[in-house]
Image: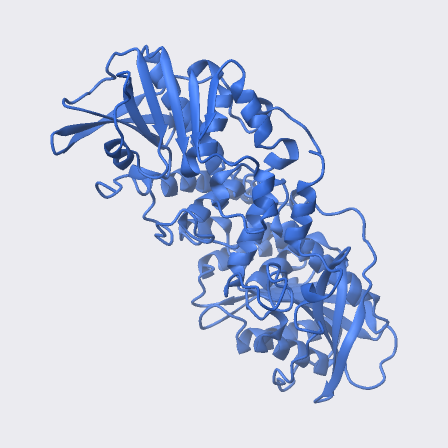
Length: 625
């Protein structure tokens, strides 16, 4: 990078404006709720909205559940369980209940959902609360999330290795699912619903007293499931509930399942997960020094309490905050025991048990080592071999995303010229949309404060930094004027915000952060970058360049291709350097290496790259280098 990126906060400011606008609009709607009828209407809207955001399977296939091991310790019986949330897609769990004879239908049930512990249900904290609830008199199921514990999705044999951090596995799965218009949030929720199916199928379970609790990622799933599944009668989500706005404003990357596509754009906030079940008992758990901002936790509680009060049940929404950092601390666990016990008519004042002895559900420690099992990447690979389910032209797909061939010539600003040796870099900041500049560079022996008039142009859409790539390039032999373009988040607007991760390919870094934010507010980075390329093409064409040869490279390659497909009248030839033959082939390799922002959500439901390249080649020169 020639100089520090002077516009490094551009993406933060751009998306913050969207989150702030959505926040203000929602606060105004909520402030206008003043009667019980309006409160019921608001809660009904929250239910409809969240349930419309999760695309869940319609068929509940057989669980084929089996108990693979059991033991009794401290008056608690523990069983290791395997079941199938989807056919051949195995889940591992631990079931806890009081030891001895138990009458059918006598035990209130609690589903325990794990946070981002690499060892999943084997985490001491989770086994501690599950065993203690069982001692109190509950039937408790603690389930491994996909990518954790005994459910590692990229570990097919004992010699396989992917990452020691489960969120990397989650985000890898999330970006591959996104190509098919699916989401890891939906897979996680369906796992939890099927776990609840198993829990309530047990003869000991009292289906009229059913709770859910979890912390961090488990708090996320508890919050989702509470809004989505009416079988639950009480909930205690921990260390998750704050607000989408606070997470973004604090530059906090969230896990793949925590970025639900389009949910924030619908005017929905975290409190609305709980408002969707208004009048039902819920305890929000927080920590005083959590990175899930406690200010947002208090705001969410106050918003929920308003609706509950209007509906005559203010005592049924509660907040307990414990000092300390992120985690399911002992104070939060005690508050949860008292809350569930009170709602179930049991005595929750009991001494907490230890985590006890761990049990393994799979014979060799991983469910995917069991013959006949399928990993989630294998589901994705199977989809890659099926016919395209909803064929659609690329231009129609772009139009559906709000990107059309009607491109206005952008206004622009002229950045002060920079000299490198005897060369002068002239830079135009193209205003491709409000709050966004795409930077167009040219190099000459003189300063240019307006676009030089020539006939031919070569536009290189930079792989990382347009200024560096311009200086490294040679002017075309036919004398065409050479330009390079930084789309948003590249070169001069490369973010120094969030985790300040300089690697586009980091699965949990800055590039991921802004792409996930864009997915939530229906303004993905990919389509924004397509608009940046279109703005540059329109700018050059309006400057009387009659022949425009375009080059896309690196992580800008597909953005460039989609832009050229949207407006074929703005260019003459296109070279795509390092172009893959098929996105499906990349997914089949299981570990999809490109950043999540590389290709648009849902693309593989409608077409693959062969169809994109075919559209580009109509009436144009296309070279796949």
